[in-house]
Length: 108
Length: 117
Image (tube, rainbow over all chains, first blue to last red; front, side, top):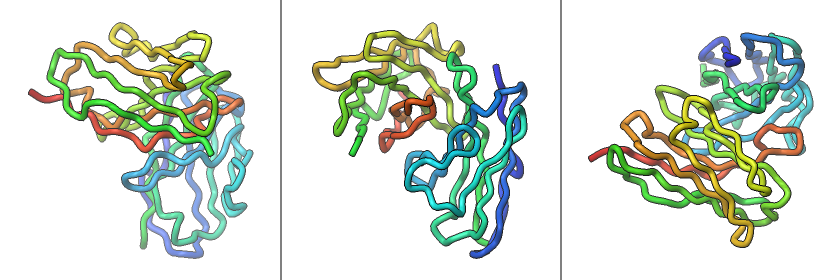
């Protein structure tokens, strides 16, 4: 199985801050990495695929990078609606999709 | 606009079978891949399995012995059966559509299933 880890597990930030979340895979997954945003009581929302391609409608303040085993999601200037939990997910092995444990972004 | 809606009992007794249905609207269930995913505080987001409209399935090896996913193209629905449930199967269950590049681009709102006597 490919294990996904994320750091930090949580962070506190203010509106306007630049935020970076790291996701690591236990094995190389090329760029087969997606990011999701989840708010309480809601399903995850698809943000990024192929490590760096924004899904249609996702604001450009979000960006993704990385390949192989290390990936990042960056929010260039945090907006009030961005306080949420963020998950990475690998889809390199389509016989077993796996998610990271999440990074909670809350208000400082 | 693609919408998915889970339905089924919110309470299941231990050792019994959890059964859920996902109804898809705003898009045809064909041709696409459709998954079930669950989320619990202990295990986080856990992929359960997917089905293609052709009937091809793939399951999480950790659940494979207990899971069946089926599709009903005439009703634009797909379903999940998980047998011999225990308290560890208590979770919010989501149905989701795979995008054409594999990640999950549309999700249902989720339904909480509690396993308890």
